[in-house]
Length: 340
Image (cartoon, rainbow, N blue to C red):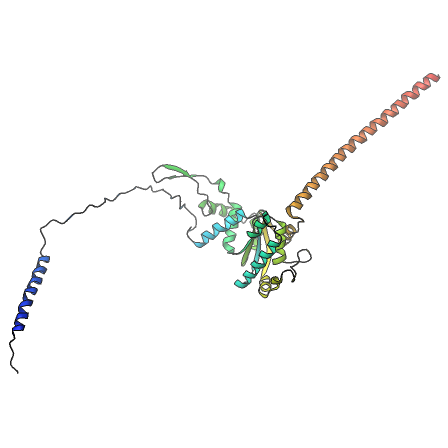
């Protein structure tokens, strides 16, 4: 074994390390010994309890019979609003139309409606707010029952506590409320009434459905819709190829073969296919219908007047003839007396 060499540098390094190790050990021991100094105290906010009543109901989240935050619940509210505000709804059965085919159908429908709309008039607004959309059949059926059998004005107010603890009267009559659910269940417990709109439209609510909505009952616009989506010559002929070349596009024709008009709901009344075509076939629209009603009333009034006048004239003629006969008899008797 070779001999060890003593070096002053090594001794200096070891002497420099030892105090450092001793200082670390002393500091570690000091940390382990509990300190006798009082810890610092900081100001903190004391917890506050508001004391909300147990029967408090937030106005932004009323009680519901169905989960209000689901997509189905929001669709139900959308459909009920659509049924309340839309006077004319056409129901179509569709069979797997592609996005390109739907785009072609909407394009030609928009072109046909603009042709019967005068710029700057109410008819232009009808054309701009006419839409066709795909429906969730089951949810639309529930919305139709809610509109038919539930009256929000008949719901009685309930007493609840406000956030301050004061008792207040609140009416929970929205479409997702328990009152709406109970009203529908009671009305359809033994089946829907046969004279209701829902009972007449129920056979049509089968399979995939699409709804075309018009913001107003306009026979001219309805006739334009029928000519594009469900043509039936000679009364509702399809547009000519020269006038509407896009109508004979391949995607448009394929989409029309997959669409079937089955009925509609007009002014809260159910109409079948023939009824929808009758409304669309009213000449000159509602103005022409009003003119026909006015003419019918005027003719009826003139007939009644002539009948009353005829009765009076016949009575007058009868009385005049009787008077003349009596006068002749009197004159004849006087002449005979003179001769005698």
